[in-house]
Length: 437
Picture 1 (cartoon, helix red, strand yellow):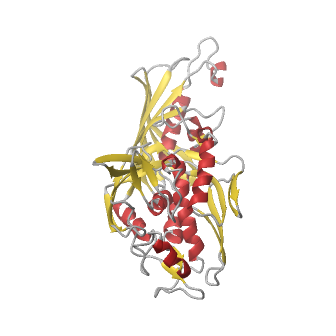
Picture 2: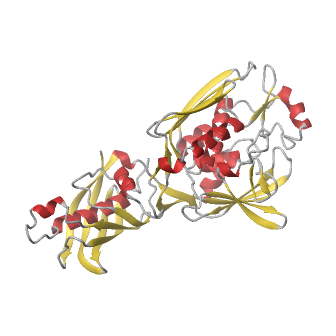
Picture 3: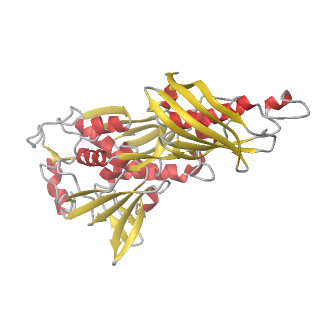
């Protein structure tokens, strides 16, 4: 699972009523720099407080009241799960969320589809830095009183959920999805929040669902729903529970590589499960965690390129501007196998391997533009205007800078230079074709 971090192309605003407080609220979603994460900005005692959207911001000494609340330095934001589910479902890693009001606004139809439409209309952009993932390497389980959540290893991100209600309209429902932005937007985001008619008076007596109506929630009586609009999916109820779970799982602070299986969980069990993962030194399971988070380290490179020893000839990606350019690094060691024969007693890096290293850096740039890079290969079909200006020796550090000149119909043209200590040692134009692996 390798993809670049993503943020919004521009600021987007959404205004609405909080479903629990019933108060008007304005949500302003602003682009953020790589490695920022998702951060709420709220007001407390006349000052602006930043609240990271991580499980550490969930107050431990307060009961859950049918939503997820974040708090920091005296500031609180209620009912964050739907907007967090939207950002997570659309693979948006970095975003500043400014809320003018005590609670995130609820879309008028009670689903995340209006959030999705707004974000897609605003636009999402890649940021050229690899997104770190939490990889589930062994089963992790949380359970209590018949409710349970389990994470197991999986090559992707899948969520399975089972609900069981003593209500003939809802009953037992099960759904399972491999989550991607397209799947989220089509299969999960339209599912509306819901409540049982028998619970409403009790919830309102507790000061909840003051903004709830038949427009922004599905209300279920003993044998029917009370809304004029019919169910959007036969299993809409469990799909909305998946939506809530995605929002709560995002509080881990990074996407998950694994299969999450839930039985009847709600916000409190979801957050308890995330706390358990966070307590297990989540950094140790973080994929692509280089010392400098702006770099693509060797594990990230190996996830996107098929090359392996002794033909993986790029060590790090220093900069990547999606669809435009890439800057890579190759440390030339005397232990390189080609020095055994090129040449004994006078080691020089073969010029063709300098070009190959340059091409591999360009391959990272190209593969980063593709939807499913793991299913593709890059074949270089032509090398033009190659020049070698001085030998590359053991101990040198090669810096490659490649610019994408043209990309059309799975064929691209790139221009690259290789430097050592700021001096150009080689340059070339490269043509390549993208083919199925």
